[in-house]
Length: 156
Image (cartoon, rainbow, N blue to C red; front, side, top):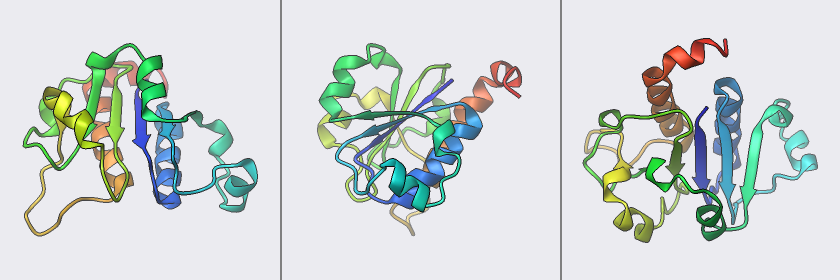
């Protein structure tokens, strides 16, 4: 249905929660290396991620390999705190790619600068600087599902 792209994620618990989110929504999870943790079968089993084998997972060596392989670049949406465009003002379609950057650095600036119309943010007060990566992913993914819910009913 949708594609979640994590660019250089650093915290394994966030990626695990996002993996569970993807399994439960039918989304594909794309992980762009380098990763801040091990996702070998042994590491995943030790972490208790008993659903990981159900995950539609694609791991990419770097962002350039990903961009070279995927053609629908006009359907890429980038979550960032560096825009004023709220996520709910975008129109999402099945198959869209929802990008989230690492917990420490976000999505690389050169990508955001090249694609300002495809950037989106989750409105927040000035008291905090960002939300947890897994929470942010859930908020935006479920907005995309809401906009396309008729097609999701068939999966339930």
